[in-house]
Length: 566
Image (cartoon, rainbow, N blue to C red):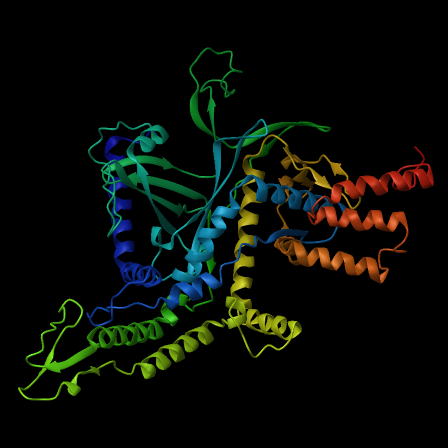
């Protein structure tokens, strides 16, 4: 058992390691703060000056790139076999189910902005024992974090190559007490580290360190200020309440001794060959995934859009400030005799020019001092075009009028060409989601003891029940004995992602019907296949048409929709 002195020494070690990593990471954190301020419309000009007028092209360009599409998973076995294909399909269905169960829509909204503003985003994928989904114990928890809350090992550009990394969380003191069982009055809890924002006194900063042991196993150390909250060796290892005498789980023990939390190496399973002990599956990677904007050599994040268009944003702010200053000094000045009885209101006219005695009243008039700002406006627009071209944004992509597109096809072509310049960013998003899917799969192999329901619809639109069972992945070879098969390739289903573009799918299905690729367009069976496809693409009221044509096919064949006799 660890002594209080050893606990204090470990706390001091990790606290010092965190401070060193944070100091080395300080320039990157400062750059992130500048990027977020620029996105929010900061009036700061490099060099210490302040702009008096802001034209926030950064916000406009970044928001134009936000996509609500969530890539669909695709899984394939590393080597072909019928069993491998079946397991890959089961994994795909499980991941698709996760897309609905987890708040990916809200996380994606954060991810799209973090990635372009900071150059990347940080995803944390964990197993949460407190989750209950469909009557099963435990579940996956996925969160998108700001890169400002991720402190990497210095000089290591890839997470999988790091020996340690830190995550920073701002947590209510009461939540900390519930989760880690500490007293609310612990004075050593760290104060909130958020800079430039007003925070509640009840908010504290929690630091989580994931690090590798000598054998490659991942461990976790959690602290806040001078308080040690959690020190878990082998983070992915099974921690069960076991009897210290017989080793049975709590509730199954007959010794009468109190169970203690211990690490379980093996699980006992009943197989056709008898009862066997099999090692629990343990992932060997950090529960962190980095999505990059566009690759940047030697840096764990990608290139920030804010950084690359900062010169244009700064110059535009200067020009807009110059325009504002000119317009504020401009005006129409009245001209009148000195002895004129009409006195202007100085709240409207900032100055008055009076004529000398004896001068004609015909001298009444005005002097227009409005300046010419056309050059500044032209240059501001020119810099805006420069910024858009740097990122690869066209007027068509922004939804603005584009006179160069003279037809619908030409406009679509322009959008595709502009989107093609953003292909690198989409590929980075797809790569990140593939890594997230793999992490989810590994955690399910490690902890999902109960089968998880994964219902799906077949090609005929019928709903089927299916399950993801981690024991289906249990494999035996004479060389290795029993082990869990995790040799699968994860990527993105290009066709699955098109479901976000439902109108395009509806049009494509209609084109297939008219072209005869589904069969005779006048046949009830062909029309049934067409409406089943529309139902899968979520076409409004498609289900009613499916049921109608199913009845027609039954009457025509005297059987079910597959031609089998009822």
